[in-house]
Every structure is written in structure tokens, then in C-alpha cells.
Image (cartoon, rainbow, N blue to C red; front, side, top):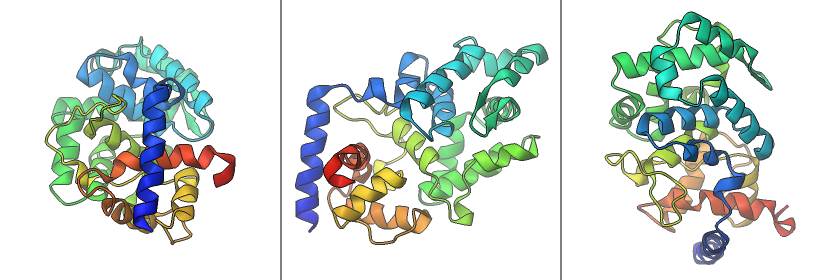
Length: 255
């Protein structure tokens, strides 16, 4: 079973590598607009937090949010005035509104000023164990900054059973480095084998068809089960198969 799944997923990765169109159609295209490490990190986090719904809309709205930040997310976070932050009130995507944008960006600024930045916070969290431990620690630090209560729902809570798909995706972007130059590989000191595969409706559908996932709920336990199965295909870099699973799910034969 695992060997068959490996062949199918490796073929899908090869196809993605050959057509080279993945980045432009994916939310990761937003942080790819930037060069500075901190800009990539902040643009990546904000894009990941908005990553639900149609990819075209995610890209559009993430671009709008970055535009409100002058397309200089790190400089904005660190130097914005109250008037500048008030400009974020105009943002809206689904249930993520201007108040949420303000709360998250101000808390991110606090992380860079007081906690050594996003890499340092997640790195400390990974010392506790897996990506879920790191996400839980990030949530604690982010929400320790005064925030609008409604914004808490946008930060995944693994302790409550969340699969934390969006933040696991962000971690994949920051930690993995691949030959397709999709993921950034900015955070060199966190091993890829500690990552958890982002799990949603799409990747879950393909994983179950391949026999890599049996749990029916797309929750934390399912994400852990899927990741353990993927480690049988590649123990050091199991999450490289995330985009292959997603693309397989878009094919009619996998629906």
C-alpha cells in the first residue's frame, strides 16, 4: 500500500515540478513577492491565516491586506502609527475583519520586539516536541498581547483538537527547502521531520483514497495519523507530499 502511494505521489510531484505553475496559483505566491526575511515571514503568516476558501480569493484578499500595510509588512508592524493601524479597519475577508487584522499585526510586532521574532518563538515551541507543540506555544505568546477577544478564533488551538491546517502550512513554507523553490527554507534549525502535514478537506480526501489516512474527522489526530503514514514514504521530509495530495484531490478521479 505505502509503495503504491509513494509512486503516485512522487509522480504528482514530478508533474508539478515540470509545469512550474504551482506558486502563481497558490497563497504562497504572496510571501514570494518579498525578499527580506521578516517581510516573507509576516506576509506568509497573514496569507496562511486567510487561507480558507477559493485560492484566487485568498490571494486577492491577502494582497489587499498587504497593500493596506504599504507592501512593507515588517516596517508597518514595527513603525505604524495609530492612524496607520486604523487603516486596517477597512479589511474584510469572510469572518476575518479589520479588528482581527489589527490584533494580529500588533501582536506580531510584539513578537518581533519582545520575543525575538517568529522564528525564535516557533523554534522555542519546537523544543517542546512536535509542530503542534510549537503552534500551541505560538498561540500562547501571540494571545498574551492585548487583543480583541473575537480574534482568538483565528489562531488555531491544537489543545482543543484543531488540525491547525493553516499554521502547519505556514511552517511548511518557512522550514522546508525543496528543489521546486516553492517552500522558502528560511528557518534552518528546525528539522523537517518534525513538521505536521497540513490537513483539510482536499488533502484528507486524497490521503484516504491512497490508504494513508483512516480517521474520518479532519482533526489533530487525523493530521498526526497522516503524517506518520507519510513518514513511511520519507522519514526525513514527510510533508513534501502535501502539495501532491492537494493537487490529486482536484482531479476528477479523486473526488
